[in-house]
Image (cartoon, rainbow, N blue to C red; front, side, top):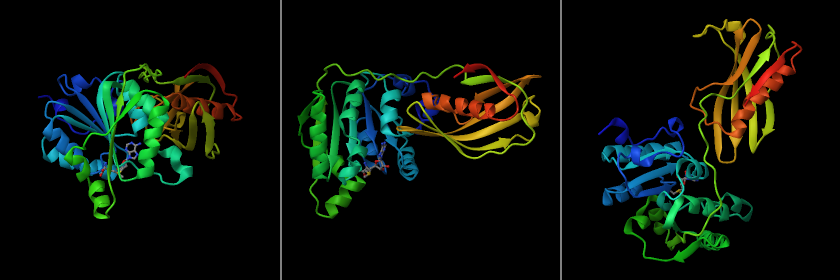
Length: 330
Ligand SMILES: C[S@@+](CC[C@H](N)C(=O)[O-])C[C@H]1O[C@@H](n2cnc3c(N)ncnc32)[C@H](O)[C@@H]1O
């Protein structure tokens, strides 16, 4: 078995999208996704009970990821991958249409206040996206202690006409997760609901392509010796680019003289993905500079990420240095 066929933690940023799961697991297998696996005890039991199936777990909490990772690694399982990533982005870009047999959501954050309902995972927009990745007959399996959340999810699932509601008895492990035991201990009733995708056509959700070259701009002129910089925030595409600071490179592993190499540290803030990135400005020839997204950290090139190159280019144009743009390639 190759290394990649036995790893538990998946470095998803290095993959092309959608991920080729049969190559990842080195076999064809029914593919199941779990969103918010917490400490991973359900993930572990399910993977042990169904060794022929393949399981992918998503978490946004680093502490949970670490707990889940240790648990699964200790058990030497080869049919599970864990990913630190939010559900919206992962479902859209990491999974091909018609690829998932089930999506498990055990005890999702309930967001009980009305003004926070928009943060709930199981709402119309997510049901539609999920259906586009589920196989016909595949299901979203919800466990919750929260009657309002259950009613909300049921109602939202019916808006698209893509789901049938089923109430089978829950597998035992579902009501023995960390949170299930916590709520049971407090005497709360627990609920289990299946939303079965009926196979009707869904909207199309495009998958991000990983471009071969990094977005960049070519500019002409000289970088000034001294500059003043303050934080810049730019709304771009569906998100924001925040330029935090400029760092002048001292000693460089490439041919650009260090005074001609600046790094901009930026945050790309989009609804379903937040990234820390670097944009470099460096000399290419006597008169030409390149502004380019750095590959450092394997950034995912979204529209807003491209906006970081735009933000830096525009900021350079605002300097009293006579810089002009030769080419925008972002
Ligand atoms: C209430 S806990 C339940 C954990 C576990 N399923 C259990 O039953 O013990 C909800 C979990 O969902 C994770 N989570 C919340 N939103 C998420 C998202 N958009 N994508 C992935 N995980 C998410 C949280 O970090 C948290 O660990």
